[in-house]
Structure formats: structure tokens, C-alpha cells
Image (cartoon, rainbow, N blue to C red; front, side, top):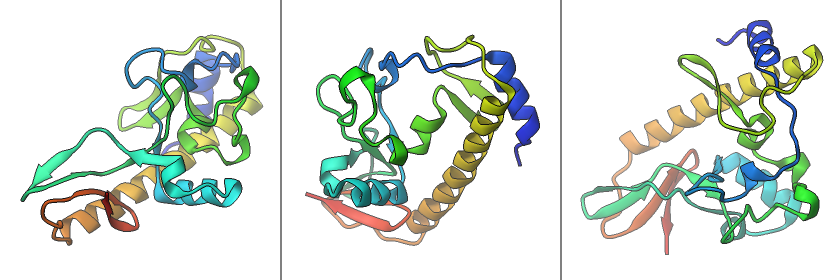
Length: 179
């Protein structure tokens, strides 16, 4: 389990303030704005926006093949040619209160090796101890939820025969046939 105080100290030492530049929501390089979503996160966005699953999410582009089936293990936030579909005027998120955990915690991530920071113009900026601890809490929550999702998806994959000649997404709710 990740230590809240230690992670908060690492965040404070690294420094971060969102500059509202929108780079994390924009396609500045290939798939730079690819946001993974869990099924529960998609359902929360559906509830908040009244949009359909298909309006919000698309299958993650990395696929695998087995027994005449093609599948992926994740969803990602739908994007238009340049941006996340929820990037609004002034680089403001249209679903801010319901945004995915990856968006809440960017540019940080907790891996098996500890805290990782991705490239972002806001890195190195001063952050208060309170802000760093709040971000630490979000990161720990994200890691726990991602681990639970991974375990559910692994269990479904191991115990399900994939439909033949189809494209599917395996998520924590089951196998969803696409198209």
C-alpha cells in the first residue's frame, strides 16, 4: 500500500500546478491524449451527461488476437481529431466534477516503482502541502481502483471463452462485443 505522506512529500518536492494549457487533453503527439477509462467511470459520465456509452468511450487501440477473435482490455475517452471531446472553451473540462481518475491525477501515476511524473508544463511549479496530500489521496485511490479493475478483468478473461470472429472489449463488467 502506498504511503499518503511519502507520496505527498514526493509530489511537493516535484512541484505541480495546472496551467490550464490543455496539452493533456489535446493530441500534441500520437495518442498523447489517450485517456483510459473503467466501466464504472463511463457509467458515471453517462449519468452526468446523459450521453451514450458509445458517445463517451471507444475501445482502446491496442488489440490482441486469439481463436479468430480480436479484443482489447480497456476503453478510452472518445476524442475528435485534435482533442478530448470534453475539452471546452478556455481549456476547461466540461465534465470536471465527473472526470476520470487519470485526468484528476495527471501528470502523476503510481507504479510498482513508486511515483512517476509524465511530461507537463505545470511540473516544477510550487504546490502547497495540502494540495500535494489531496493529490496523493487521489493517486492512491486511483491505484487501488486500477488494481481492482485489473483483477476483475483478468478473472473474466481467464474464465470466458471469446466469441469467434468478433471484436470485443473485456472490461470489469464482462465481454462486450463491438459492432
